[in-house]
Amino acid sequence: QVQLIESGGGLVQAGGSLRVSCATSGRTITGFCMAWFGQAPGKEREFVAAIGWGETYYADSVKGRFAISRNIAKNLVHLQMSSLKPEDTAVYYCATAPRAHCGSDYFISRIYDYWGQGTQVTVSS
Image (cartoon, rainbow, N blue to C red):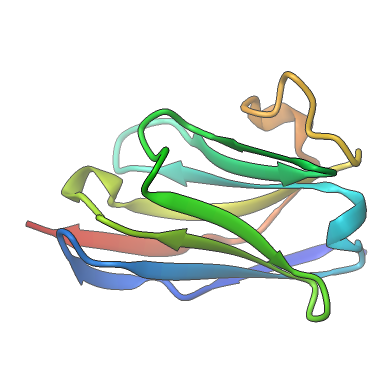
């Protein structure tokens, strides 16, 4: 059974940095597309970043500020968030898709078959 557990969320001031992590079991992260989505209060869940076999993708709103990476030895996926803005405030969810390449539809939530419970990130102004 695949399980994803996020950690590392918290409260940070605007302009600060934070790293959230996703511990994965039941699926080797190097063999599958892994992604982060964010859900702000009152809004739908939105794509943030994804990493697959030789590829990474970012939402336009986080390009140059966020970086997705993998710790293969520990089967962890990280999202390093820098230059944080109040509008980055959201619950951040880790997800995995049943394919090595994320593909052209990497930003669509329904391609991901397992999700974590989410971790809250709050950016104060």
